Image (cartoon, rainbow, N blue to C red; front, side, top):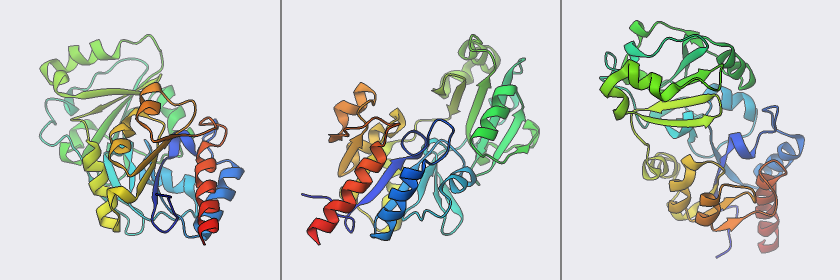
Length: 277
């Protein structure tokens, strides 16, 4: 069955498929997004970034369903300005939040359920990320943070050789084994209290906007979207995606992630719709 604009919600990996090396939307993609939207295309995004950073990057691009931000731990509806947390550190103030490691060159930030970013300890790398990713933040004290308000803990290391996992095991003790660590960049380690399943993300995006799983097309280029790919009606990855993503995808684009794979898919949807019409 052919995908059409009217029957398809496209969920795209913003960070890897929309942005260039400078962290901006290329003009080509802006033009394709404008064309896609003007023809009635329906879009939402997945991002590691906070809601405000995502909104700044997308500008006037309208989203037709909640966006999965903060690495899929928050489903955020930009139309209403509200979010649905898909996990939290509730009850882990003393075991985790008050015991986070303090080391030279280690920055610590929290992504919150209200979409804000709190910085507990600044570092050169953390400051660089905040600027590059257009992320507003507040300086905070761990003692003032409630676990129920925290989605993710982000650790930024100035030195690549810093042994973060052993450091966490030493400072957090048994609590470290209960957390889910994931490296999303060479200098960034993310901690979540549990893995957010593809089913949880799907249910937070599609039903609230009136879509079914079969009407969802996922454009992915990160491992966190693998479960979503398997649940969606159609999935697409760029030609240079990780092997596990290419094996799971229904389609692999002709172009790489940084040479127009997202524009390729969106433009093809527009052209297919014109031919059907």
